[in-house]
Length: 57
Image 1 (cartoon, rainbow, N blue to C red):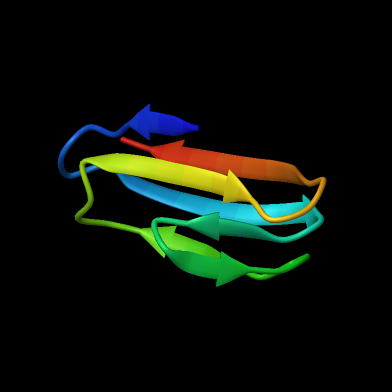
Image 2: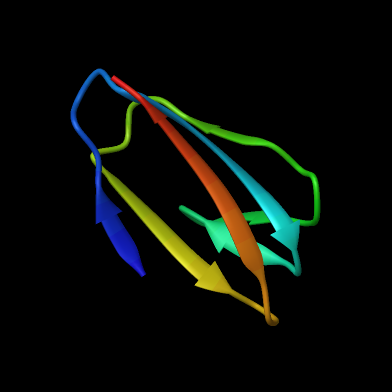
């Protein structure tokens, strides 16, 4: 899944369950991933997962 992101916006991402790749970075349950300069957020689950995504303008 890919999501567009406004330039200058900050996003935080936390897997609530499972393991995912966020813009090529592996994230496990309760790992936090901060996204600052990318214009798109690419999310790929490597196993069944639930995610929390917070986008701050």
